[in-house]
Image 1 (cartoon, rainbow, N blue to C red):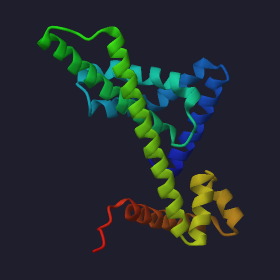
Image 2 (cartoon, helix red, strand yellow; image 1 turned 90 degrees about the horizontal axis):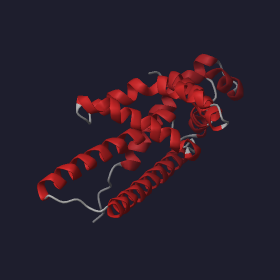
Image 3 (cartoon, rainbow, N blue to C red; image 1 turned 30 degrees about the horizontal axis):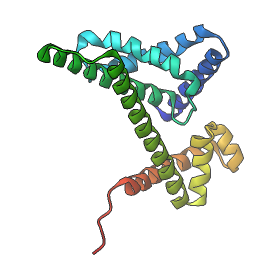
Length: 204
């Protein structure tokens, strides 16, 4: 999907999220319809085919419950894919535990299982926060290494989610020119991010 289409999709879905948070529960159907194929395809790579539909439903239930905590740091599709990844991990944890219970002939107490689930949830949340913080630091560092012109166009188009037409007007150039500038700036930004994220050899 083209980046402008993704941006438009994200704006549309964020509006639906806002309606849900304001009490319009039916607006959540917009989120389900928009991303159900994406989530199903992602889970199909992780789970047995017979379990994909049930886990996909669980993903959207988790997403609905988590909506009040969605801060918009990442696009909605990335946020949902992250939830799907955790749901798949929980599926395999549950499957492993059931098999272990059969093999060993005993099960843990309910309180112990709740404690383990809580510990895993806390660990997942911490890893998620660490990953998000690192990504924000990389983006900030990469922006500082860009030229002022590249930084200006990416700030308008990517961070502020302005349309190309708006960006062109604000930068005082034509629509075609701003598209070219944005394309080149994205390439430079990607190269800088790859450089920042790649492990550096220790100096001797």
